[in-house]
Image: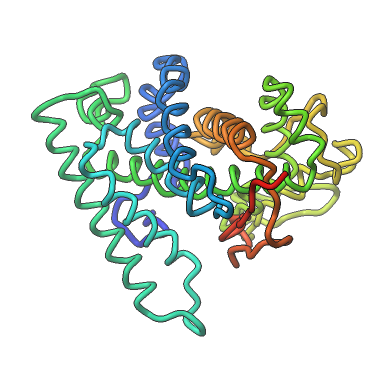
Length: 337
C-alpha cells in the first residue's frame, strides 16, 4: 500500500496485519517495553534541559507565541535526539519539518503553489538525508534509534533501509504535529482555567492526571479518517456494510456522556479516564509514552517560568485541518501581575 505521501514504502501506520504487526514489533524493540523499558525515563534530563533552554530564549519577553517560540521547536529536537541525528543536521531537520507541516494545510484557492512545492521538496530532502544516515549506521553503529534498527537481527528479521526511513519519518512528522498541538492546547486550556494553572504551580504532581484529562478534553487528533470496514459491523444497532469508508471520531468518543460524567468539563481529578487521545487497538499511538512525558515537562516548565501569562486573543487562530486540532499561533502576554 502506498503511503499518504505517495512513496513506494509506507510506514506501518498505513499498513494492515500482518505487515503492520511485524514492522511495529521491530520498531518497538528499541522504542519501549519490554525490550527498551528505559527509553523514556532515560530522556528525562534531555527533555528538561531542552525545555529550560527554550524558556531561557523566551526570557522575560512581554509577548510571545507559544507555538513558534516553544511548542514547535521542542519535539523536533527530541525526535532528532532519539533517532541519533547529528547535532549539525538538526537545523535542517527543523526547516524540513516546518515546510512539511505548512504544506499539509495547503489550499490551492488561497495559498501560493510555492507553499506546496516547498513541502514536496522537504519530504524528498528529509527522506534522502535519513537514508544517508541509515547507510552510515551500517558502517559505524551508534546509540540512536536509527542505528539500532539498522543493525538489529531480531526474531522478525531486519528492517529494510526503506522501512527504517519510513519509521523515522513517522516519528518526526506524525509525532511532531501531535505534540505541538498537545502542548499548545494544554497551555490554552490552562489559561482558560486559571484556578487549575495556579493549582499546578502549587501541586506539580497534578501534571500527570492533568495531561490525561487534556488528552480527553482537548486532544491533538480529533478524527482518524480513511478506514475501511473489512466485514459487516454492527455498532449501536446500525450495520456498517463491508467496504464502507469509516471515519473514527476520537474526540467525540472521549466526550461520550454515557462514558464520562459531565464530559464537557475540564477536570484534572477525573477518575477512570480511559480516553481515546492516543487511539486504541493495534494502531494505538506508537509514540504515546514519549508524547505524554514531553507534554508533562513542557507544561510544567511553562507554568513555572511564565509571569502572569494572559491570552492575547481567545479563541486563537486555528489550523484549518479537521483532523489535527490546534492553534496555528498562541500569542500570550506576561508580566505586570
